[in-house]
Length: 324
Length: 246
Image 1 (tube, rainbow over the protein chains, first blue to last red):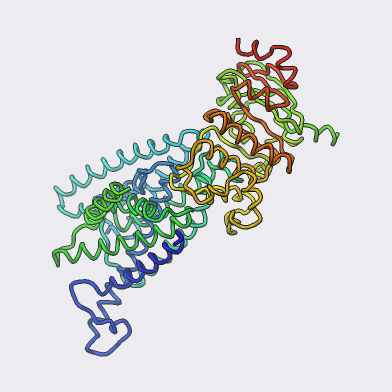
Image 2: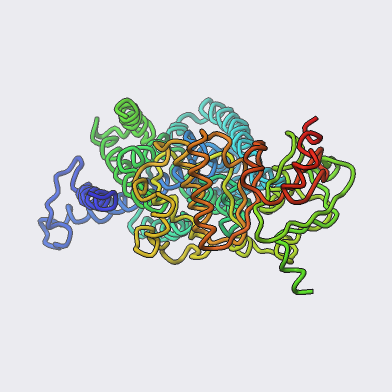
């Protein structure tokens, strides 16, 4: 079987599982509740349409995006250990929102808090792009190290603020440190999906440039594009994408690192575009399962999603490495 | 005027090489002209500016002063797309994703001409079969790059550069890590391709025996300056090789 047909079958299988997920959970729900308006199924219908399906859509958008972002960072920085949170963009967003929450008393989902998060993230992105384009892109490590430095600064500030806050107001910190899937309405999650899908599609189109970049800058220079410009552009777009996600979920660890690697080890996709498609489905599935687990393990307790993704992803990753 | 333009694939006009504006490799500028149709060897001791010159040709900021004319056109005026249609390179170091197949690697040669919105042509189509047969690459096509020997991989890198359809191919130390047999295979592939389709070659190398056997023209650099530019016979007859490395 060719890589493409294997991927197609697994993708189909994954999608079927994904759409089965809303029927898993504390309450058993009849399948016909999807369309039925009969009084006996009214509650099921509401649970499905106002809780579980919106959540599934959100999880698909977040999981798929994070896996794609992880894959693109790994190629962009030619670093197998790269993951979406490596450059400090997410900690900057989080810090911005927590600052807004703590000092301006804005709710963390308010437009004000989100814009402050966005401002922090743009500041970091700007610094990163500057650090890259200042001289020629000869030293790729520099931008990663620079981003890691920023990440340390911003996460220390975040820890400081969170520990100060936990003494004054208590609680609410886990959400930011280990990630969290918020309950959104159907309209909100459809909106979120409509915002993230074009970004994913754009990244998919740019995938071919990433193929070029993966051959090293020397060859990439003769492939009809400027590696530095493409890298700066991708840095900007992925930062925006990541900001959008992190502002709602905090940092969901391990997914962006582990999913693309699993896809590579399992399928050896021949192009970045194929890797992107497979990563999107894999990431969505992974986060969907982790989310169901986080709520199903000890209901009504809901574990921070990042803890589950790490507990789940770590062993899978180690196993795959061990096998190869 | 047109005629003069077309006789050289590369003309350097008072160039100064280096990566930082305030720190060029040498103090004085130099000029040279490389005739079309000849295999040109770029020689010189380490640090003489060979790689810096090659990098300047592919648009890295390593040209501090002067102009480089490629087929009569100032390289500064080339867009990345135009550059990719004129020059391709076989780099000294092989960089590639570890699981990439030869097939997918070769198809990336079409990236510049196809762009990102159309599908890349498939290398398995009949159109490319004679090419792959000539370079003896058919058995390698579905293998993974990192499982190939250095000789095989170097031929695959050459094939990618040729498929790009350039007028000038740059080879950076092409036989450095190859045993004599692999080196000869590599060179034969290039020569047989060149017999069908004329292409200019500029290759940097340390191997003076290889220069003597395979090149028609020598461009020798020393400490970022021109040391010699002329026919290979002259280079060896005048014992320039001994002076260059003494």
